[in-house]
Image (cartoon, helix red, strand yellow):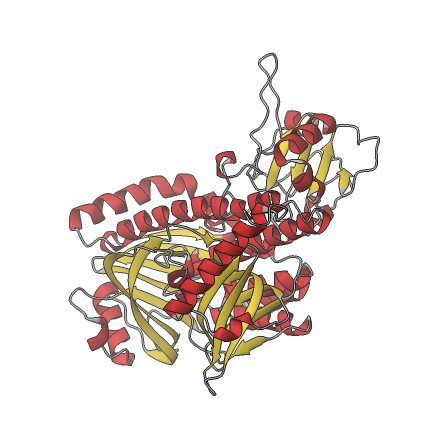
Length: 569
């Protein structure tokens, strides 16, 4: 720069940073020299082909992003999976893929009852599906489907769209040589041949022992709970005295919880807390093990036929200290690990993936319109980490507490827990499955600059059908249709209720008239339904901003989002 003053100093600095990064990574052996060769660049590289990685790939495909998805296994397994419950919130997020929704509907068992049996109290708290207030969602049940079948539905969708999972390819290392691309080195396990993939973005969906996370220096501090869970898919013999346990049955015993989740083909997903003193590496998970421990814990007699898959694992909890490093992002178990209590893990991971790809697509629209607007695109990408990291911490904290309550072997705490459940559950039981189904989760406006706090006016009070950061209620409209059918699943949608539409043409702006009668949950008063309100809703059905007129809302959003981000919503 000093010898050639006409050269832009920023170009010099970028070159120096890139050279320094290349020198360091070559010195450390973190990238192969082939990384410098010219190869077609893709938008997104997904590492890991579980439900999280597949969800990212099909969303990238739908939103027009070029994508590759690699998997170190040589093929998809057809029997090993821990996750079994699919929540209504995730089905809503997947509605842009009707084939997947149809597949899950046909293959999944619908959980019709939730029974909590307090064995030491000889008491059962029963919650029937028809008594549950799922409210405004179109998916009024929890679905029970083994993870490998969920993966099959997702992979079939990917294949139908012209994509494929590249099996037998392992992630080895990566380097971020410039501010807008990543070079990942992968290896064909069968041949040992290496390839350098250049991508704008990389998503690590490679599980709790994520190599991607380790490679970019993100830490996930796991906290052991000293609890072992044993799982198996089983069938109960017809002559078993206690065969006819209805629905989803949880037994809280002195030795810990046992649960039975019925699947569609007559198989039962069974899990239980292993006895104290059992070592994971020294136990044989055979028919005798499960029948003996089940009998000792519950006093019930079952004759079991074990399926192909059994596992025992230690429950750990933890959240990574970041969800991204530059253009490398984490999702699912790579970002948060916790016990299976509540069935939240896979569902949260799919939610991570769909949120991330939506943000990437938005950032890419900004850069397509304004190639110089890298700061604006960076703000959008940063909001993924801010939103999902905050929600991930809350998730792990809640699941950790629930796990300690359910698995305690302290007799005094068990008595207190059981007494409390008998007192409290009857008052909240009608909304338990809706809550478990993630339908009431919300982002706080403080999580992201792209969620605006609701405006306040000292001289009057305003009411809205929902607040920023909350899931948009799926209102019944005057013509009998539902609001979600009119929401754009690619870009933001403007909704006008009891207010005039803008005089100038605005894309994706709809004016709707709610029906006078709505579902009981969420509770929305007639006065609120009649109030003037304009709402900006995201493609993931969460509300970004509200106000009492379109003009005020548009002005506030444009001011906070900035012209470049606003123009690409």
